[in-house]
Length: 366
Image (cartoon, rainbow, N blue to C red; front, side, top):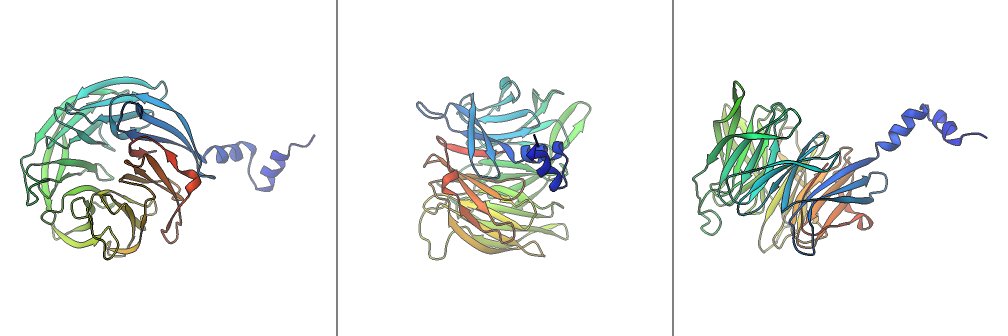
């Protein structure tokens, strides 16, 4: 009997093993951070995503309390536990076993970031306004606290900016810079991670001033780390900061809302497409939109479109490695919206059949 799969493979100019690998590559793992609740999510959730169809298959839950934000390196998953007494947890994805938990010495940790070059991770404590550096063991499990910074800042919004609120810390691609957003002080601090022997520490080297009352939250960093795209939570805007003559200047402020919009803002997340041609940002509150911006030659942005996220309170967004799909976690409406993405134009179109029901989703990573 003729094996039609082999005939098809030969027709395509592929060996059978390479054809099999190509098929396998269409499936990706999704890891979803959530707020846990009675009758709702019980921890970090795992899915298989089929890139050819947009369908997701639920694989299971890693039980833990409020794993709101996640990071991954290889088979190790890291989650902040966003509680009054915050902690960070390391999980082995092969066994789904908890490899250890350490306190973050602050309230409501909301972001975790891994260095691309050093065995360290950084946790941002939102409510208490602090930043913590942890080292990792050779197996990827948590080692110990290395450094801690308590920030003291404020700005003009008395309801939201009476004290520092550290919302995120993102590493540059080469790991040489760490950009730390203080929503409470309207500042983005720039640090490097110094190493002395087997110990690590923060070393501040610069800062960027955001517009007063804007509340910087998350950033995207250009490859050369000389251009920063920052979502401004309190004003529902996106700011472009560029380094010129060793000084940081605010080159642009763009809306993450449609013309004529009136209502509450809550700008949340920002990502760049894999090819570097587009930037996307979400806005919660009364807006509930995702905006697409084209990256120009001088790295400034041009608004391309602003569309509904198909849900309520879009938090995190992410884009598949092949650039064909975008995902938005809608916390209040308990769903992840899946968008088909046009790689040429950047346009997003909701695939209603691919929507993933999740209780209070906050973060989605691959």
